[in-house]
Length: 108
Image (cartoon, rainbow, N blue to C red; front, side, top):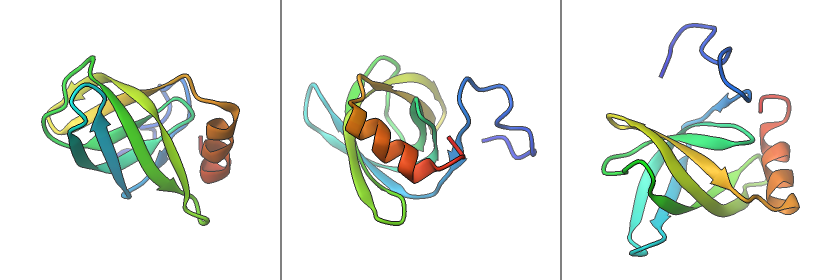
């Protein structure tokens, strides 16, 4: 993860940093992976984990914001770089987008 103050400048959406836990469940095998949430935006998440492959689809479950509202949605692994993986959310509902907006405030 970039450490300079401008790490967020070249992204299509602003991201908020995090160190929460996220549960990823493979949609094909239903196998679960516990990962560290590194950052989050309106479009996806960055996670620290091992064994994820580009193109894999997961059900993502995480508790967000002060109210710890649960976001559960599908996401696809778009890139992998060692233990850092970028997942893009797929087909978010209005309710799911509201949970993200509430949790991220002005940061996403």
